[in-house]
Image 1: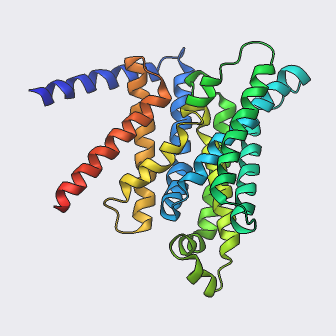
Image 2: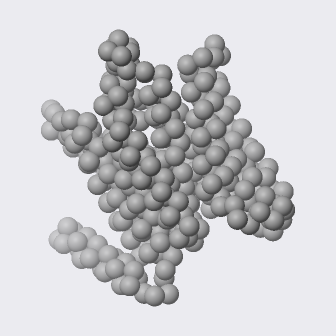
Image 3: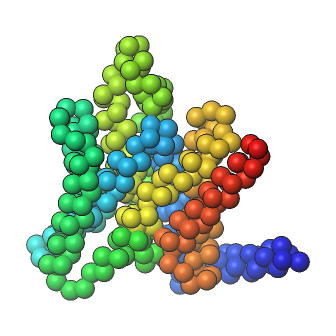
Length: 293
């Protein structure tokens, strides 16, 4: 009885969502869905290597630091009149800069890596908040921290599509080397793979990836969408290729159903998507443990 009621409620919710997608006055909803589906490809693919290499904390530092770039662009648009600048371009530059610093610290510096990563994490957010505070007018930082469906524009989709295409091209070109470095960088170096260069490439791809869905799920939550789908896929996948494909499908599913639930129940989009992914992860992990026993 309970299951049948839940199925009926789900049908009603998704029916409302499908009807809303065809409404000509709700273009922002179609933009958000298109961005989520496009961004799911690089997020699922790169997230697989991030989880395999166990550098989620590096990805989180890069993701949080992009607020500095966004704040600087918002300030430049209002104060300097650089209206041609897009917030995502500032986010891309900040993410790449953070990835470069982290790579240099990891490979060359004698400083404690965790301390420097933490400094990059908080410095980027502090710079962004200061720029936003000095920007004329009202700018809600929560929209960038946790996502806002109304922020998604056609420009976001084009930027995400271009960045996603570049990421996929790099993965197709260097996937063998990336896989080797993810599992055993020392052995890969012995076999002639430039492990340090591949590690830097992986950080750059991670930096580009976290920017693609910032406007939809936000800076704080995007790291969960980068790591949860691969973590779920790893429970059943028998190869890294299976894990990658499953991660892309799961990420797209979370974006689609999370957006539908948020629209039908009037919930914030970013938290709805991430909460759905977290629930599925907990259930999948519990089921995997029970089956293992």
